[in-house]
Length: 416
Image (cartoon, rainbow, N blue to C red; front, side, top):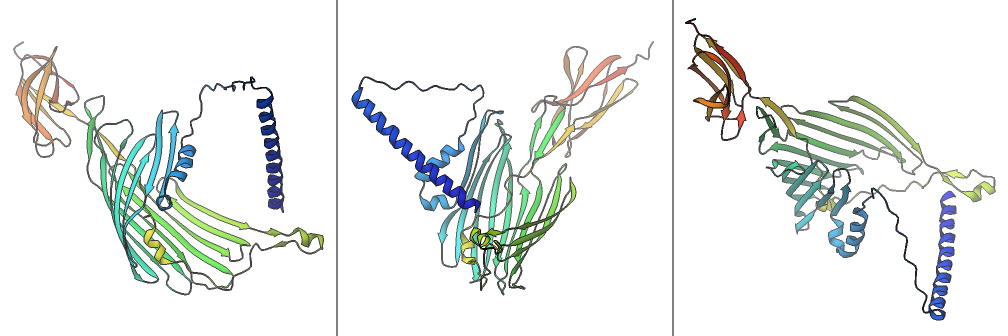
């Protein structure tokens, strides 16, 4: 009844506003004829110190008119603006079926994601095949690139494989499954402002999976659904894993629903959730008649309808798009030991194999003393004779600017 009253009030307001608009329009037309010299006053502009910028509604409104229906059907997008970072943001996900048959399809799935912190681009390609009229299997591959916003360096890349299954096992049951695996394609190394700290970035190796199973019609008035998802993304400093499992009961007349859920995350631990809802329809006429005005929203249908598995040939592939970046920092260390007038030194430049590095000494300024080469792991070692004195020493790789930490050594004069 509340909905009916609201709808009636809205209609009444619209009618009143339409009449007022026509009256004002007629008055303006009369003023223009009677007083042609009359001009409209300039509108007052409200000054706002930090105006909100809404790009998304404007673009979506315009694209709804400009884009063909076939394009809009498989396109999802969002556009916005981050006022704090001063950057436009957006997301585009487009499913393109490039070849269609009655029982199979080939598709492209380009994706773009621009957040305030990262920019990601992805291109996926896959195929789906109807095994029977009630079962479908699909496979896809994808290549992702991501990097931090405002960076002009190399993208981090990953490749992945995915598989999906959709079928109707029988007795009005329904099953869908998806699995995706991710493999890093490259590594990125860079120096921090402190040159002896090397930053290594890579996308983690991992997987994510989902399953949704509508159980057979065990009861005429109740639907039972099992759902679950799991993921694991691992690298040197990344260990994100978790799962979610829930059991849902829903009456087919829409009267009630109940859900029990258990989830776990490697960082937050276990979580439990139980929810329930009751939906009632209210009939005002029955209340006036003295009868019970509450009832179920719908009547229980005589049969349970199955979805069309064929429609799954043209649905977007389900997978996570932006994986977390794994980042580790390694400090280039230098060990030094003095024995009489001989100085022994050793250390490692991670991921700098078979490269020449220079031992520099400084009293002021730095000067090259001797050159050594790293081994296959980036390790180096050497021994030099130095005259008596106090020295600061360091190792430098001139091509990249990577430098070790500094050590102070004292070579004593034995003749004194």
